Every structure is written in C-alpha cells, then in structure tokens.
Length: 391
Ligand code: HEM
Image 1 (cartoon, rainbow, N blue to C red):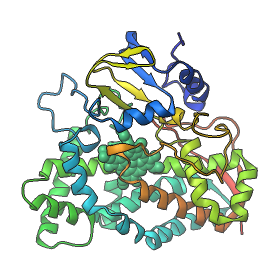
Image 2: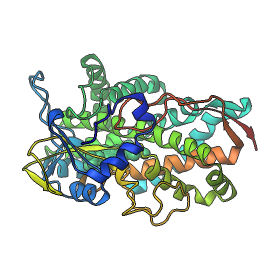
Image 3: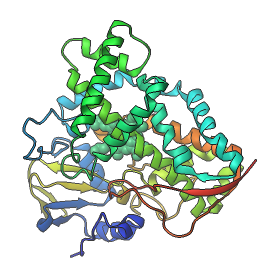
Image 4: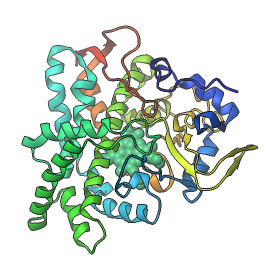
C-alpha cells in the first residue's frame, strides 16, 4: 500500500510526479479510510471521462447549505449540463475567440512595455496574471473603469474553488456574490434593452429565448468563467516560461523558430498541466483492475499522471517542444472538455510570441523553489522573477 502523501503539502506541490509514477503502477488506489479513490493511467482516465453515465460530476452539497443552488455546468450531468453547455457555447464560439487575437496582442504588449525597459520583472505579476483577467473582462463586456472591481471578484471566485473534493470548495462569499449580483443585474438589464457584441448580450439572449437560462444560472456561469479561465491560463503561461528556463535547449529551439510556439504550448500543457486532476463519483460500484470503487466515492482522475503515461507517450519524462502526436488530457475529455481551450491556447501563444519577440537571455533572479498555488488540483507558481535583455 502506498503511504498516501499529503497532497496539499508544499513539497508534494513542488514535485508530485514520483507519486504519479508509483500510483500508475498500482492504479486504482482505493483509500477507504480517506473515503477517496485515485486513478492514474491514461486509458483508465480516458474511459472515466468519456463515461459520464457511470462517472458523475455531481457532488452532494455540504449539509450546512440550507437551500443549495442548482449546480454550475462543471458540476452537473446531462440533461442540465447539455442545456447549459449549448447555451454558453452559442455565445462563446471559436470564431469569436479567434477574432480577439489583435486585441490580446495589444494588451500583452502594453503589459510588457514597462518590464522591457527595466530588464527584469516578476512574469506572473506583469503578464501571466493580468492578461487572462483583462481578456475575459473584455469578452464579457465589462468597461475598463470597472476592471479593478472585476479583478476582486475574479480573485474571490478562484479562492472559493478550494480543492474541489467537497463539490467545488466553499461558496463565493455572500457579500461579494451580492455585489456581483447587483452589478450583473444592472448590466443584463442594459444589454436586454440594447444588445452589443459581448458575451453578456449573448447569454441574455439565451436567457430571453424561453425559460432556458435563468438569471441564477447566468450568474453562476459568470462565476464559472472566472474560476475556470483565469488562474488556469495564468499557470499555463507561467509554467511555460518555467519549463523553458529548466530546459534551455528546448527554449533555444523555440527562439530559433517561433512557429514552434503552438506545439511548445501543447507540450507545456502535457508536461506541466495547469489542472493536474479532476474529480468524479461513480453512480454504481465499479470494478477496475480487480479492485472495487464503491458507488459515490469521490475519485481523483489524475490528468497529469495520464499525461506522463509511457503507454501513451514516448519518453514521457522528456520535455519536447516538437512532440507529435501529443494527445494530452490537460483540457479534460468528453462532455466537460474545456470550453475555454481555444481561448487559453490563443492567450498563451500570443503571450509567448510577444515575450520572445521582445526579449532574450532569460534567467531566474532567485534560487530554489518558487511559491506555488496551494492546491494539488492546480499546478503553477505564484511568482516568477526573471531578468532578460531587450532584443
Ligand atoms: C490553460 C488553461 C485551462 C486549462 C488547463 C483548463 C482545463 C480544464 C479542464 C481539465 C476542464 C474539464 C474539467 C472536468 O472534466 O471536470 C475544463 C472545463 C472547463 N473550462 Fe477550462 N481550462 C483552461 C482555461 C479555460 C478558459 C480560458 C475558460 C473560459 C474562459 C475555461 C472554461 C471552462 C469551462 C466553462 C469548463 C466546464 C465545461 C463543462 O463543464 O462542460 N477554461 N477546463
């Protein structure tokens, strides 16, 4: 039996990968005393993510919640999931995302300009953190003067995430949720009277179209977009630069040929997955490799372990910016496959293109481990101080 590590411990967060190697050899782990199971292998993770009828995304609300709201999309199963997903995907199309490229580039340039002058910066605070927040605010249609307030809500939404094992962490704090409710009530009223090209207008149109998206659903959708989209993309950009710094030969390849950036982004997603795991619950007892996962037991699906499975990836422990094929599970799979994947890929590509076009000679300005996002579900650093030369 593996002595299950403390998966929120800083040393585990720094390097969880030996645990994944061990786990893969023994998968599934059924930790009855913790009321938890874990699955590590690529094929098993794929099978679970594809089979939503057996592997539910719904978690019972904590007993202290008196009047639990209907679950958000990420924590719902069909038919509710299907309905919510089709409404938001109508308003959030790949075409709409592609059209954002020039604007994302302009924001990235603006954010980088002072740091380029200085020759050093914390890449998280300068670029990786603000970029996704500003972009999603603009997609939703938040005017620039409300951005600071919006950032505060976004931070709160992310903080509410917790580890996800208790069905999505705690609720967003009541007073903040109330503030958001007032703000978005006014905003949806305005968009109802006078639609614009933004996502809120699209969601309002979906709401008006019969009784399909209630106002409560709409608010939850906004919270979900903040939770699901911001910190994850921050971590993707940060992990990319950290992986480049740790593998200078691979960075040299990308600097010599910036057309490799998209495939390098895929490799970062595989090798340093911003979302390390997701959770499901079986709707019945499930037999897996001779072990039984009992109905209802929260089961950690280790995407990051699957992403280093030698049965799927040649030399999985090698960071290879030209890897192909690269069918990683970093965005999940099946009905909950990340809605924001095209946006996350675009933001990461543009951020790295701008950074590598403007600067070279990157090096870390501090030694030792960097402070990390304090939950095993996510992988990322809270700061990344670097120095560089302007090109
Ligand atoms: C690198 C960045 C990102 C990563 C690694 C990521 C990862 C994931 C993963 C693994 C899932 C599936 C979870 C599950 O099956 O339980 C997911 C779902 C989701 N993601 Fe992302 N995500 C990223 C960025 C974004 C962005 C930018 C947005 C939107 C603005 C977004 C919106 C969503 C939504 C709404 C879902 C739920 C989809 C559903 O339940 O059908 N994500 N994401």
